[in-house]
Image (cartoon, rainbow, N blue to C red; front, side):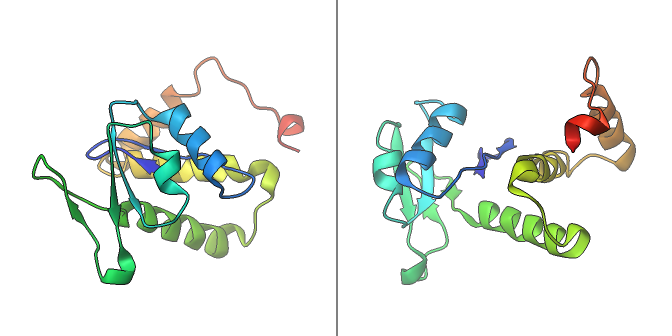
Length: 142
């Protein structure tokens, strides 16, 4: 999960959490001018090395945010909250999901996150507007 400060969330399903896969997800979704904030997992520094800056939140030292030079406080709790909501949705509503369709569930929760400040009607209007020109048949799903 990648969340822009004050902006949108994007998700990428990766086969495993590795430096290469994290780097590829960053390249797909994040401008090289971005400041990256992560926790202190060992793969992040190399994956984030091509970006404007990389700040680390060290949870083991009871750090939960980092103060950026701009004065903005940033952290990784939004991503952790997203994963908590996604896991609760899987366990509570669907009970399990297949790898084949995991990206669809993740994208649904990213959509919910990105539209969390809209009313139900506005969210529905946004969702329906996104279907224009698209068709998904039952056969494609199974």
